[in-house]
Length: 122
Image (cartoon, rainbow, N blue to C red; front, side):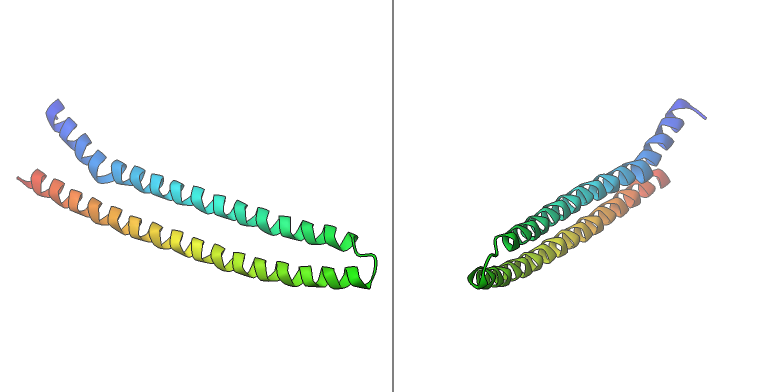
């Protein structure tokens, strides 16, 4: 096997297998990084709200304080419900983007492989 043939085979192997695998790994890593960041952000927001409410109960000293605390609980519950809705929408959008990018990557790789195969057959 000549060096030219070996170089051509190596180049085909790179373009058909390694390059697509690296591109998909990079896409997956970027998606995972975004997802983990979103999860950490959400966890911090939820834990901050929980701690805030735990501190607020410590300030209850009479019936008026209890009423005020209950109102704060309702407000916090509403805010957390909105936050949860937004977080779910954010994750759904990230998932859709990942699927679209994965499909585009697969299509591009299929086209490249087809071109490479056609070129090698000639």
